[in-house]
Image (cartoon, rainbow over the protein chains, first blue to last red):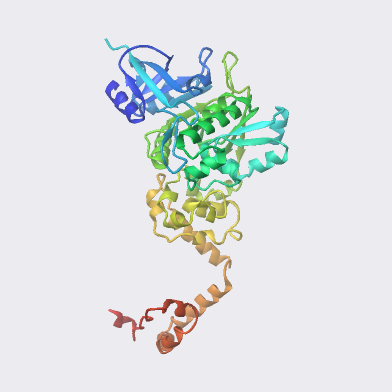
Length: 117
Length: 354
């Protein structure tokens, strides 16, 4: 699952690092899509994963779930007020169908995997 | 919508891309009520500055060049500068808007959740920063439970932009909870019907399955030649040609069912299996049944079917056509056609063509 997550997250345009710690901690990772998941809470503002230039994420390896279906199952029965599934940097191809990153949100997403011993 | 904005004492409304709000012409109503409305999807923002309407349901500004974009934003035509200018201008909008308006890609009945997807992340900002969030939800977007949501999200992303998942897929369930740091204090959901419920139980019911991915637009030879503005409404391409007459009126949109070569590329591309070209044919049938359209065409086909229903009629008309061939090159479309080439010779009998 870890390998799949790394592969898919890189495919989505993230930088995946093996060590170090910085930035905000993701609530979950999704191997199927290479996404990191953030849930709004008392200590986690909704703006914290979107309103910045570079998103530094720390992800515990045991928080990686297989796919979207597994994530949705975990969110129930008490679905949080805001769940963001982030797959790569903010991007658009609105002009000339050319892919550009960082239009509103981060132009770079760096994921640091933790907990491999 | 206006009263919600008034109650919130709003002046500035930030929107993220929503076809449902385009459909009900929300911007015009809000502006008439004295509110400032700003589209935050980059393509839509540029189109709004230029005073134009979106051209494509997924890529609204598909025809714009970077020079057009730079002109709209008042910078030099460098992609970098364009992006930076857009980011800065829209950042101010997110931070000062009183109300955020979004559509909903899907909504989940069981949990009361709204699901929004964007690649830019503008929906996340529109729903995080303003005090009030208003969702305009097309009633057919509802899925029963979260279990049905996952496959639809995969289909939408792969068909719309060829990705595994859209960059920002956000699930919102109610407004900010009491101990949370940000998010809207109020969340309103406006469910729109606008002709949708009338399709239930009809031959056109499957059209309600449409997830607005735009795959049918991208493969349609008619859309690719004409572009979105050639269609009369906010929805263009094959899905628009089917949906618009159904939502408004077939009388008013009588030309749309003909905006297709019936090649079936749309049906093949549709991830949810809507038989688009067959529905277009059904609409044409309805046009004929209800006597809508050109009288000349109807008279012509009636005469033709009478003439060719008998052997004698067939012989007489084909003989006449053969004899009149030299005359056809003198006027009308035959003249244009025969400019520089000869009109084809008509066979004596149908079987002689082989």
